[in-house]
Structure formats: C-alpha cells, structure tokens
Length: 168
Image (cartoon, helix red, strand yellow):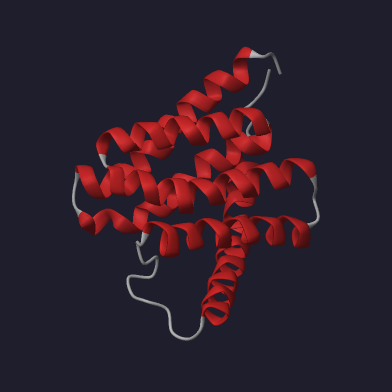
C-alpha cells in the first residue's frame, strides 16, 4: 500500500468514528448505544496500518471534542482506546489471548483514569469494595468487552477484505 492510501482511509474512518460517537449529541441520548460502533473504524485502520490507526484515533478524538467534550473523553478513554489497542494488537499477532490481554490491560488503565483521575464513573455509579476489588471488576469487564469486540471487529474486517475494499 502506498503512503497516501492509509492516510486517506484513516481520515475517512476517523470521520466515521466521530459520527458514531457523536450520535447522542447530534440527535438524542436514545442513540447512545450506537456509540460502541465508533471503535470499529479505528480498529480497521489500526489493523491495516498501526501508525495510521493511532493518527485516526487522535483525529477522531479531536473532531468529537469539537462537538462534545464529554463524548470526546469517552471516546478517548473507552471506544477509541478499544479500537486502537485491538487493531494494533491484531496487526502484530494472531494469538487471541495476547490480543485480549494487552487490550484489556489498556482498557483497564484508561477506565481507571476516567473513573479515578477525572472523576467520571464509567458505570454510572461508584464501584463497590476496596480499590483492588474495583480494579479487578474493571479488568473483568474489560476482558469480556474486548473478547466480544474482537469477534465483532474481526467479522467486519474480514468481510471488507473479502470484498477487496482495501485493494491497491
């Protein structure tokens, strides 16, 4: 692939990610469930080209921040981080356990930053128990979410590759 093609694909997919993440702001909170799909474009770009994936992640975050700081933070620390970490991990290895573990650690760290550093409860309420128990709960949720998201991302990625969407 030439140097320009990943950048163009990355820019287009960054816009798609920003649109998915901004749906609740643009229309209404009824569309909040659709924000989970904002990670798919980032995952695809990061899997094709990790550098372009990181760039798409940052560009999408900036675009979303223009529309809503709240949604931008959620994208940076949840959906965008998932898409970027799963895509980059998938581009370097096919071992699911490594992909899930690395992405889950990254998601646990970003959720912790949001929950404890910024003060936005990621589950809408304070987690029960001591800090270690809370981190363990965050990690378990991260693993479950990454496993499910990995299968969804792989399914969509393989369909796009099958139909030569990324041909030269």
